[in-house]
Amino acid sequence: MSALGAAVDALVAAGGGTSFVDWSSCLLWGLVASLALVGTMETAQSAGVSRLSIPFMLGTAWTLDRDRARIFGLAGIVVTGWIFAFFYAWGFEELGRATWWIGALAGAFHGALMLTVAMPVLANVHPNMATERQGPTATRWLQPPGFLALNYGRRAPLIALVAHVIYGTILGTFYTLVGAP
Image (cartoon, rainbow, N blue to C red):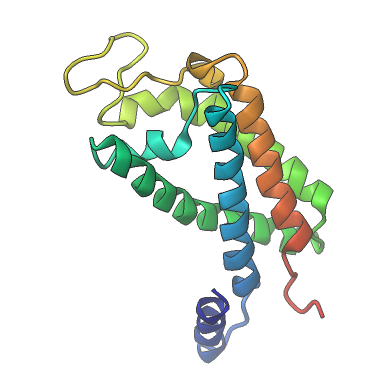
């Protein structure tokens, strides 16, 4: 991880610029935060608290094999987790500080956007997901999450929000600002 972040920093420096985020920290803690988010949500699903599985939902966009879908979905979450970690890091750099509570607030905002914006429109772009207006078909068999992902259980929104707060808290706690000792 650090080698990749150092390579990105070296490329930026070779171009005469300075990096505006600590790439090593962003990549490392983005991975840890993403795995914590997935771990929280999958534990809740395994315990029967929620039926929402982001790795399964994301993975079924690429494969119909239910077992492989979780692997593809986990890889997709790690990549998107790194992308979001970059935006969190950018925000921390703009504020000039990274703290657990700023990360937690950013995570709550991130989770709220995911639940209120992304989840309701997911059925319109996911190739294997039924829509709210049209039920399942032979090719669209996955239940849509609906607003706040409530189609996956009454506690699904709470679990998703908590998982995103954990994601942000990890990034806010451990991300190292550029130039920090």
